[in-house]
Length: 115
Image (cartoon, rainbow, N blue to C red):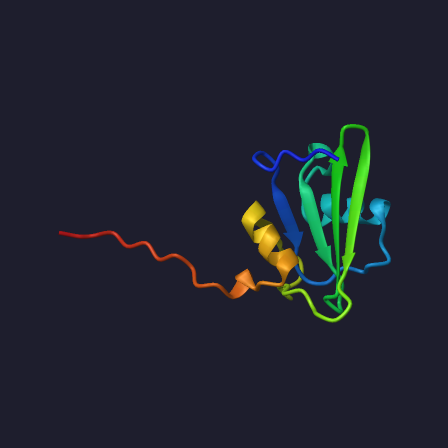
């Protein structure tokens, strides 16, 4: 497995995904719902209704890879709003896998100084 974390983009499909879907079904969601090319090498992250299972789909050189992580006791923080795609960075991906809810973090405010 080789992922260039400096160049890869990570996309979340918000809302809940049927976790019975495997590579073929998730690839269709990437194309249809997210509007992305699943062969680009980007990571696509999906979460089930119970918020205990995450799946990550990506293309590597000559085939698709599918990671699954199931929590035994806790739940993942996950945006419920259906039909959106959200781009996150590698640090946010680490936080997500650690259970940190960065979705509710304060957003940076930028103001222009007017003289």
